[in-house]
Amino acid sequence: MCGIVGAVAQRDVAEILVEGLRRLEYRGYDSAGVAVLDNNNLQRVRRLGKVAELAEALTREPVSGGTGIAHTRWATHGEPSERNAHPHMSAEHIAVVHNGIIENHVSLKTALEAKGHAFSSDTDTEVIAHLVVEELKNASSLLHAVQNTVKQLKGAYGTVIIDKNDPERMIVARSGSPLVVGLGIGENFVASDQLALLPVTRRFIYLEEGDVAEITRRSVDIFNTLGEKIVREIHESSANYDAADKGPYRHFMLKETFEQPESVTSTLEGRLGEHTVLEETFGNGAATLFHQVQHVQIVACGTSYHAGMVARYWLETYAGISCNVEIASEFRYRKSFVQPNSLLVSISQSGETADTLAALRLAKDLGYLGSLTICNVAGSSLVRESDLAFMTRAGAEIGVASTKAFTTQLVGFAMLTLAIGKHHGLTLDKQKELTAALKSLPRKLEETLELAKSIEGLAEDFADKHHALFLGRGDQYPIAMEGALKLKEISYIHAEAYAAGELKHGPLALIDAEMPIIVVAPNNDLLEKLKSNVEEVRARGGQLYVFADAASQFKSDDTMKVIQIPDVHPWLAPIVYTLPLQLLSYYVAIIKGTDVDQPRNLAKSVTVE
Ligand code: G6P
Image 1 (cartoon, rainbow, N blue to C red):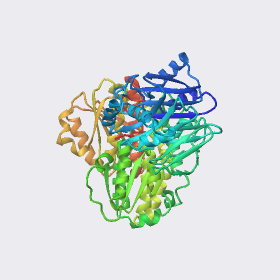
Image 2: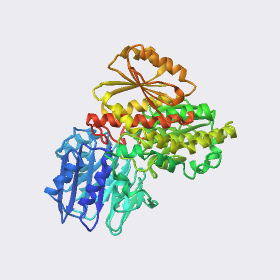
Image 3: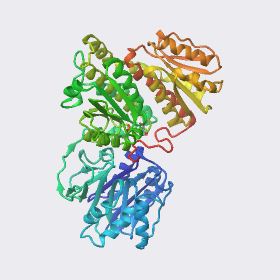
Image 4: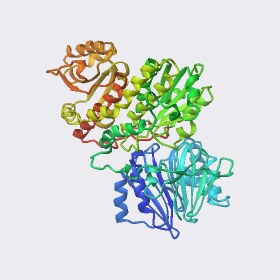
């Protein structure tokens, strides 16, 4: 969602703030702004559009000063516009940036208007600025005013507040939206993601739910919901400073697609024994839990949900354990039946997705045996709040459309399948076979990426299309779903995925020469069934694009283009077949000229409902 950066330093902070926003732009990008304090002068610059627009405005209209806050927005309340861009102000001395949604903003606004506050935006955020001004009338400090303010807020917030009349500090508060404090030498920072602060520090404190912190150049004081001063652990980050650079690639998405052999290698590294997976990989006590577990409930959103869908096939087929998968936003709002000895598994690239986090919190009261998260961000809320965590080590993923985060999630699930399977009858021979397959995966991914040029050649066929249909069966059905999601996310072509057996129950009516049909067809137990479905399409004049290995024996002709994928163990075929679909949507988006890394209306990390 929105991105936040704040700094208190002796030096001018405007450049640090803007660089931080650039690194956070993946979170939201419809408008951006900064407010900087210099000798009791509060300077605010905001722009509609991307961070580049703001940076340009700042070259023409420079601001200076050592205390500042900045924000890149993904609109929730109020259209994208300069007046709705953060920071928001009150009484010309309080400036606020906020990520999240204040659910009771309407009633707060009515009360504040009755007290004479005039609102200058349509955002929910602005109530925070006016509330702080109100609270300052009775509070002894900015800290106390903010503590009293957040008590009145319902909903989710990560917020940073500065005061022209008290320019040496910023007050930050977190509930439901992530904030990390960055510790410098004689200067301190805050951001919604540590990535923003890597150019200035490696030392971080992750704020917990309900924390309020007072940050000055020399101190960081943190208070819990009861107002008690508390000490939170300092983490040293080893994240890669250059992660936010595109290198030789035109887009982050392409870079991240090509990084997959490497990110899968790191995800596997040190975690596989000679014949199986090392269970400590999942955390202390994992082996005991995996021994007891009889059912797995997976919750996730978006691309991560597709990873969960693949995992269901794997856990039931190979690990011999029952599994359900549900979209987190559905799971959290329905009464669900918890099977005895169930493990709750959440999957999330960011570790901060509001619905997934809410599902995990709900599950804690429902009697699950324990919780595991498969996640790419150390220190994120899901990692901190789960009993066990498997870190995917994909490295920072900046492109909004998930690529390497997805395939490393699948690797996490493959390892979970082995880890649980060995307690539930997966034979040693089978463990050896699957472990060997996993070890060969990075090489298979490299070979698959060599197909990029020929896939680019297909993209022309899609550029003038309005719809596309993706087909798969078994564990390739979720891959078809992921392919369709990628295409619609970045090329804005409406795409749907069907389990191929469902074709005749509706979508067959859509097939004509204008409808491209993409089929994922590795040689597996369902191939013959899938071939019948392909014939159903061919008989109705559909244009087919088939991704298959040599053993599948598809041949290109007038109605079918076949792209030959390297042979791979059927278990891991979903991971390998994901790559050509990522590349296809990328090249289609290039021809269509869309904003590949930051597609319209989307955000990378969805920290609001
Ligand atoms: C957003 C992103 C998707 C992602 C989904 C879930 O919609 O654009 O790429 O799959 O959130 O995010 P998570 O961080 O929980 O995996």
